[in-house]
Image (cartoon, rainbow, N blue to C red):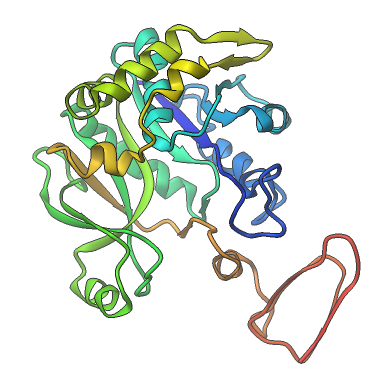
Length: 318
């Protein structure tokens, strides 16, 4: 069975400002290695024995950057699906699901944000193999990150019992919004909670079936947007009028928090959503004083600092 990676690259560039901007968001930048975050995500699924060629969903403004960064990696050509307007993650995933279900009625899709960091990609791929068993049983699987601190910036997932016949997969007891500090500390002590990573795996047809039940307006709008899509060079453009009719909702709100088929696979893979400068410092290599110094940097008397020089000398003292 081939798994179809669907990579969401519609970020607006509002985090990690001023390096990340709307025209050049963080997923298109080399922040954690010599590769961009998008390229690292593409490499994570560059296993032809396990994965089909990825489908990347992005907006019109970034299309040539996405295409060029994929070309630099080589490998099978990717499909680039262009969103005419941002409608959040649930409609973007629905459009990809329509395309995949039309070409393969049994398609299993692995939905990944394009701007995450994973230190242990092989452990991630092993977890994907576990999740496939749950998807075969009809589950909509999310991946939960084992928390290592009482983080207040992430949503949490409370896991329930083990899914029948799927070792390593658990039923989702509930999704929890971003907690305050005391609540986050209680989740960490409990041991039954995981961070909501925003990564998912399910059969395309199964996702569309849940949309038919929970979000029929979204299902109809995205189906029409795909039916009226037009080919433009190497890109497939969704119809703007139809796609604009889809309610702008995240997959969590539209489906995962409302379905009775949600499952979670816990992960310990050195994950970060690289959502802040502090998070970027945590993923980076550091010197003996805990500093990450990138580019033309002159530093004295520093500790636990992240300094990035891109166009000139940066000097920091104390």
